[in-house]
Image 1 (cartoon, rainbow, N blue to C red):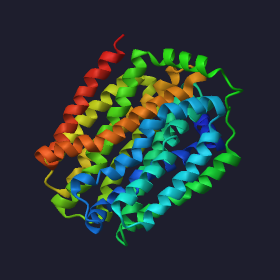
Image 2 (tube, rainbow, N blue to C red):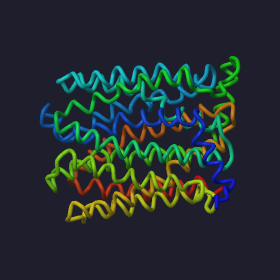
Image 3 (spheres, rainbow, N blue to C red):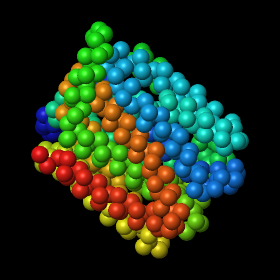
Image 4 (cartoon, rainbow, N blue to C red):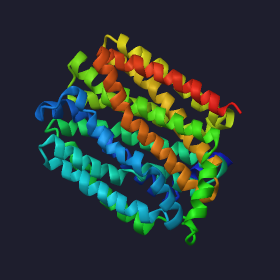
Length: 396
């Protein structure tokens, strides 16, 4: 007997058959390539280029700094001239600058190229979310956001494994991967069919109204939560967990990549269920719960005595990200007026750029004060403090 198809099942099929959403997935996969694929090579890069351990986080900081600087500018231009005119050049720059990193042997020059690659990366994540907001609404939007986070997490799971395998041949091989951004840029140019802004608006009036929109306590709480997500992810997890695994357990780059991938498996599964969770719990509740998961996961790490037991905190951390980050994106797309959607999402991008940029620096400070365990204790304190601030901003 042929199974009865529910409306929910048909909706999922329609989403996965939409070429526009598949292209958004491709852009999102490029957006997270620049960090996830190269971090397993950090220990061997550190040795090859004679980089102090407290400076290795600069490879992330200079890459994420352009997102912090360019976020609002990206949003304004994307709302005024269109998404494609920003995305296509950004993807090409990302590919060229990122690929060039593989061919330099000077740390300062590597940092310069990473900065240029970061300029290309700056619009990718925020505009992929904006495109979902353009294309879908209601439950379909929440489901698409969850699927996008799930696909990104699959990439985040695979990239460290691929990067770790490539790094066994040389620290510079993972830096060749960004070349795939160029064909994705061509796919966006010729294949993406999305509603673009119509006509040029008066810039002064646009900016004035956009500022009024942004003066919203709920939006500010979401911006803070976004920044905190990336402080914890890029500071405690991405930058310093590889060092803990290498120094405490003597693991090779490939093994480090596998452990970095484990959190993404948990994110992918959890985020794929976001549509179901959103029907039972509000986005605000899911975001609050995510910071509890972060605190619990980071508190466990210093007490782990066996390498494979690290799968417990990485899985808990991944569950937190799987329910928290796409819920932030969904709530932002719901609260933002349509005509200012790219601006609101890009301002949010500035905040997660802030988190990406200061996360390694803050955790590097914690490392300098008390060693590797202090990084994770500082992460616990930061997660709980963010929970308090977010609760205040969303209790209207």
